[in-house]
Length: 342
Image (cartoon, rainbow, N blue to C red):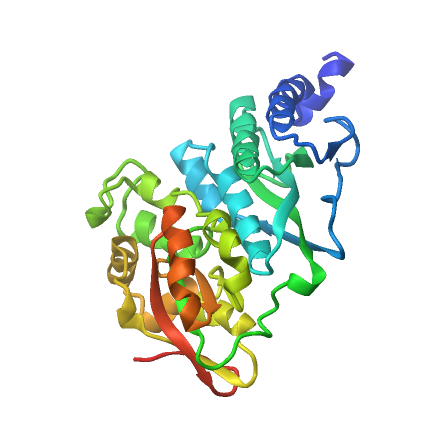
């Protein structure tokens, strides 16, 4: 065996990696904006701060899409989870009032085909373009031995910016505020370990199987793209007192992060109908209501806390962006708790 083939025999094909890099470079180039600086293949990503800001505050967040990647692999569909990743991270900085400035991705796996690698990064790039945000850099690593053939993980880091005196921390939330729910597209990127067990083991379905009253196949329902709420919220961000992105920990766990110690957030569970996907998971898996509330978003992707007299304006912005909203509770005087008004 020639020395040039030793690395491939060990599990890393440099020629395939080069082909993937060419596809990735095309995707990255398509995301570049006026803020982009330096070459696409530089060792570090570079972006300019927006001009004219008085006191720019950088807000950063790193996250992944969890075991949703296993559904993508099982379905053989790699073009959505990259967009999930970007939208999740955009929402995580949106809660502080920040607009996206740059994104970096990290893809690691073993024996991934060039097409799969390219599709994953192209999904990231698509999410970046939707937010006029450069994909400033990243890393694609083939790691046989650490991952089994075909396995992969995907993570990303976002950098956003906001004027320091306009950043949201939840401190403005007060008794009398309204909780405004924003509809999710499904599971988003949380609860997949339980959802996969129910769908693939308890129900014994495969990705092409119809998933009950959802009207979709298993793959379509479980791979629905995580919604970005930036366009729905940023036009009216000045009217908002606090925002909770409903991810791991559910409504209570995330709303508590913006509920001040002197307040209590009370959620009315009858204010919205549980979407079919969540009803199927609860019934087929025998999951209690309490556990459903801790594991899943229950059809609520974001909760905005705001004064009652701004509700009409804020809901109109969401409607314009194509996102359904509803009043799902209120803030009262209390001791920092979040509870369902059962």
